[in-house]
Length: 204
Ligand SMILES: Nc1nc2c(ncn2[C@@H]2O[C@H](COP(=O)(O)OP(=O)(O)O)[C@@H](O)[C@H]2O)c(=O)[nH]1
Ligand SMILES: [Mg+2]
Image (cartoon, rainbow, N blue to C red; front, side):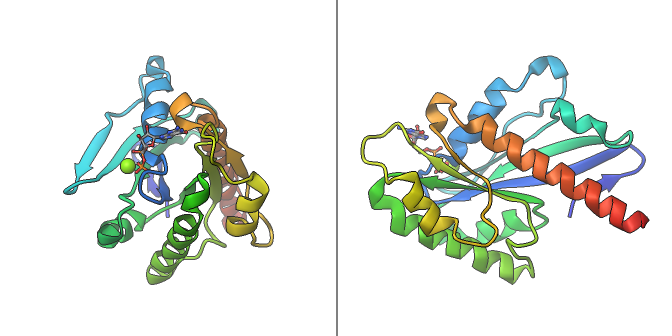
């Protein structure tokens, strides 16, 4: 759950970008980091937590619209996880305390099985933490739409977004910064609504 710092009037929200290795998680974060207004004076450093051959990245940022919650600044921390199978322990660690999840799927046809496996792995890892995708704001991104060998979005929806209700999903080409902010804005909005609703429920 989000960390609330009463003294500093700060709400800290953790968003994790999950998905297969090489799907484009890091590219999403790098694009966001590059394009977030430095003028806000609120952008954290892009920090790389190095594992052997893959990186976990995170940084803080403060979306303008998020400042509206009752005098609290909402700080978003964006994390990626290493995709390789052998780093499951790291993935579990990164998921601890997660508030929102973006699943970055690789749209290339030959990655569909890997996408499905990674999503199942996400659910398993959440379960180990007593969490469920049903309770966590969750958005799907179908990345690498610029490549020629992509599966149709409808097919990816069928494979990856077959819950009831479906979750928001976005076609993207992260390396061209297409769909990156659409995805981020949606997870941000879902998170803020959840906090406002939870707060209202607590107050009731
Ligand atoms: N063509 C294409 N390549 C991409 C796209 N997004 C990421 N890539 C490339 O895919 C590779 C893996 O991306 P990366 O962000 O490191 O994947 P990660 O393992 O999920 O963090 C890199 O070479 C990226 O430049 C995209 O939308 N289109
Ligand atoms: Mg990466």
